[in-house]
Length: 311
Ligand code: SAM
Ligand code: DTB
Ligand code: SF4
Image 1 (cartoon, protein in one colour):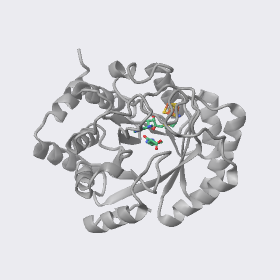
Image 2 (cartoon, helix red, strand yellow):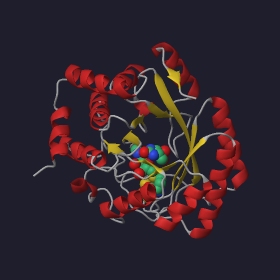
Image 3 (cartoon, helix red, strand yellow):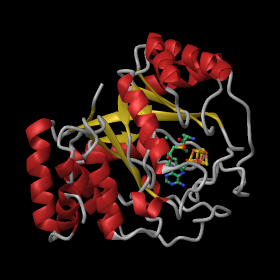
Image 4 (cartoon, helix red, strand yellow):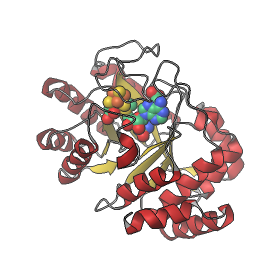
């Protein structure tokens, strides 16, 4: 038996597009200014060589995707990158590490990065893999605003994408983050071969978290050659729009982030995503290891649409 939320979301995904967009717009306007977009810039602070086997990820040591492994960055260049992101208009700086989970001595350096980025007057986010409660508390005391940890897909489809950590491991990390008083950033990826019911299952699991994540990144798979999913066919952009609309309707108060995959979308498809309730993006030429639209292209798009970056 699907959960009531899952059945409701599956029905949303099957609606005619004009009906779905109307419902999403109606909900969106009850909680947000539909002309404003929240802006985060990503930096990979520890790249590649990851022991996990996530089938989509160019940073897994199990794939040869042309991403060399590097060590955790020093603090100073990270703060310089954050200052550049702030100068370019980013409100939040998100630091990602290709770890299964952080070691305590690495966490000390990440905590110092968080303190430094906060001191620049930016919001902070990190994504470091699985966290224990004491590690989440350490990050909270450094001033961390958001922790990103994705469920990626439905509980049923998950095992065909990742075998080295379980869905429950991810839920446990999310609980540790929530209990530490850090905002939760949690979403998933579409285009990995999942069906519509898996998309509904992902969104229902997110929506049934209590409370739902404050930030919900919806990624379209960036198919990187050498990864297990490197030969996947691109998704239909309209399916991306539908997923975003269903996320907006099922999590009315969350920031829904149009995340990886924007480089392959036309300006018009991105405009539809904003109409469907997306109100946040990653901004800057690179995500972690793959390309993202240049800031100038995003600024031109916002001008065209009469939308503004939240500061
Ligand atoms: N290693 C940490 C972890 O996995 O928890 C943090 C970094 S990991 C790269 C963050 C998220 O990026 C993943 O959970 C996944 O949702 C997303 N991601 C990674 N590779 C991707 C790809 N090729 N296309 C779309 N999203 C991707
Ligand atoms: C999220 O959901 N998407 C971002 C962020 N959280 C860390 C990462 C996307 C990564 C895309 C592949 C890459 O650039 O390596
Ligand atoms: Fe490692 Fe994160 Fe990539 Fe999975 S998604 S292989 S945990 S860096």
